[in-house]
Length: 120
Image 1 (tube, rainbow, N blue to C red):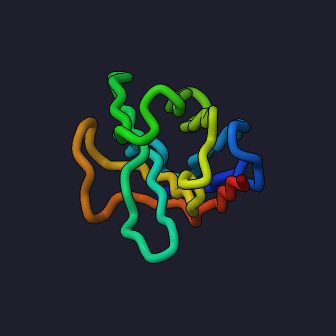
Image 2: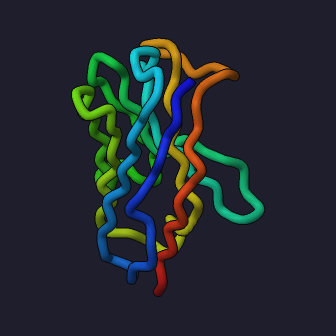
């Protein structure tokens, strides 16, 4: 089993920056694909950014150029640097860790979520 703990959420004005971090503990040898998802009230949970075990990344179109995902395998962490935040980025952000190098699955691990609120 893997436990994920997120940190770094908070309240920021539009145009500001936040950095989210997610630390994994437990059976971390099973960790492969990593990513950040978000869910705003009334919306479905959506992929924000993902990074494979090989280091390749993908981003939602709405955050491309503003957000950067990174991973540190030695520290079992995945981070999300969020710059030029917009009001529409307001959501609960979740860390997800997969069990394969490139594919998400139904038994992946999820963090408890961290709130990001962007004010105008």
